Length: 188
Length: 188
DNA sequence: TTCCTTATTGAATGATCGTTCCAAAAGTGA
DNA sequence: TCACTTTTGGAACGATCATTCAATAAGGAA
Image (cartoon, rainbow over all chains, first blue to last red; front, side):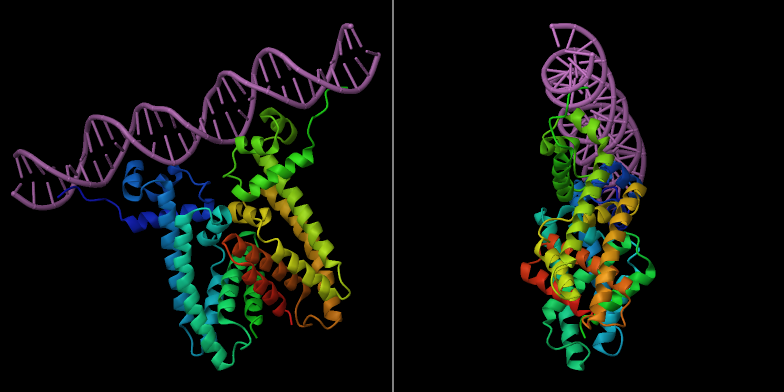
């Protein structure tokens, strides 16, 4: 057929994610992307379209990975609450790296329809998993039954944003740990 | 002496705050600032220095106002917990507008030393007020005494970030209200 | 009024922005 | 080896970026 690519799209995308999560959309230039991704300018545009499309692809991939990691953590442990704790612990542990999801919301809000759809898909996937786990934990008597599972799912997502912003602002590991504990304490 | 200014620095700064909180630092151009502030380009540079200095001044003024509003809310009501509730309610109520503090942390992290100092000052002012109020509420029996007041202060700040990010992502008023309630529930 | 100082206005600066054109390079199937 | 198709690298595009220069305008002190 024709000449094959010399790079892997997903690996290049991971490099782009690394730049975007640190510098944001507006703070990232095409030159920075080319340097980090290790590909030519034209290759970038051939493979990903323009900068906005690349950003959308980066957020999509990042969100999917992040959602998958959350769901994997949820499945660990014996009791349902153990999985929930594992999910919170993971967020606390990895809060040192900026979250592309949080930063994307902070920077762009809901002004990009394409981005809204990407977020809605990830949100739905994560939320349904959390709701199921919360219901199980309530059946176990580990989460108060007067709480609406859907509200609790919103609570977790918001708490994670809070923890990540705190970390990005320079909070210590101890403080972040306390935040994770209080997140769970609200559900007793 | 000489010709006086035709505009008020603080009013112009408020206009700049309005642009920065919506579009971020990198997403805001000098032209957007000139248009919003209603002053000439040269006047902007004469009065505020370069774009970074103007941003610092905007964050400083915004943080001071925000801290003051929090402290004012804390002082309302009979019991200490009433003031705390008022502070949380205010955040929930006004979460519709993007927070320059949260967005600044999300976008820039701790990479600007000057900005770090501005944040530290506002943080200290807010935190000491919260700590005192929490101690009073603990004495009243309205907040669990096994919680460290300083940790609780960190908790409030992080929760506010979470609520504001949720709002910026499109969360409904009902969801935001639930988040405010859960923030307090963690302290029982 | 006259002078002095500062504010204002608008054009212009070089740099960098995102994006594209174009020619050379290179792998694949015949 | 040849022809075909796609990738690749680099120069180039107009637009916009933050910032400044130069000239005019305007108020206060004498």
